[in-house]
Image 1: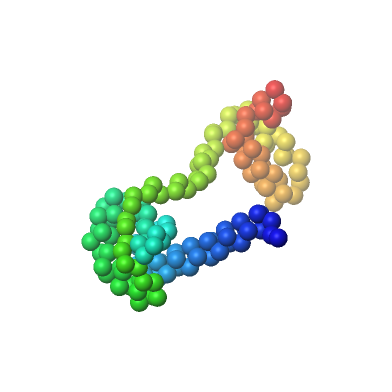
Image 2 (image 1 turned 135 degrees about the vertical axis):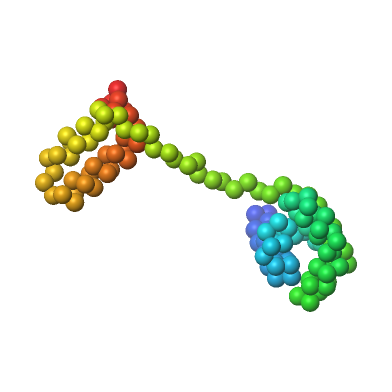
Length: 146
């Protein structure tokens, strides 16, 4: 007797493979431009449900439905109908842009003073650069632990 988790894992793995195959076939049939805004969601019987992230493309793809079905058939996917539905594009996680702040005179003097004891020029310049980067993000008070 198999555990439920094994059955679910097998079913989910199969669905993932099926969706991956569907996505590849879709991409080859419609090309990069359309694939960037429209993604197959599922096959419901003989109807392919496609999520489209742009309303203008939704309209355009509806007019291209017969051509897309022919391209899909040429790739081995025979569907009787395609239904295009609006789906919000997933938000991409973007890192906030870090804008360093300007160093105060006191911070600049601290950089020069702390690094002045380093005899090797290359090492001293690297240390100054590192300290300026630190002060670009943190204040002098942060530096001394206030």
